[in-house]
Length: 119
Image 1 (cartoon, helix red, strand yellow):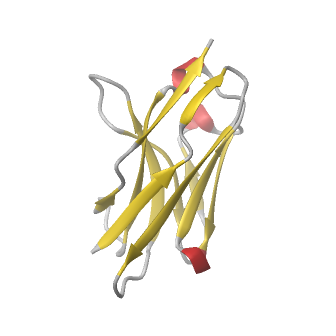
Image 2: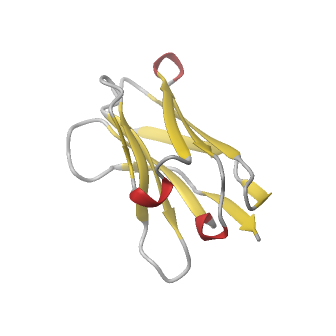
């Protein structure tokens, strides 16, 4: 079992920046990948960015390319999402996710953190 704890959400003006953090903990686990997803009311949860834990290979959804970066600290089992040039449409609840095997679905989820971008 892996527990994920997120931090770093908040309110920011358009054009501003925020950094989200997510730390994984548990007993005897090995991460395969971690990622960030976001969800707005009435919509499905969408992928934002992911990082492969061993290779560092990253993926970004098109709408955040060039504005968001994802990084990891292997020693701390922590993933970061640096969000720059934020837009009102980035407003959502952001969820951290993790998987310990190369499956399609992410098995472990954080509690979510609200990001609100004002215009």
